[in-house]
Length: 88
Image (cartoon, rainbow, N blue to C red):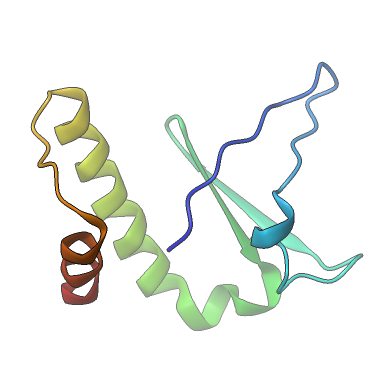
């Protein structure tokens, strides 16, 4: 999983960082899903195939943000983090 930060322009445009758009082609349709203050971008062609997986990922992400907001997070090095991610 990659994490990056971007900004919204005054016109509401958001740039997807170059390294995160390598699997997208110019003109490709992208599905935008909003749930509360979270937004998920997904290739429209992949939507039906992976909906269940995406919803589970969104649920887990929401839970993680809630724990983070409450200060309930664990500090770990990158190796331990990757091992934890493999268990998901």
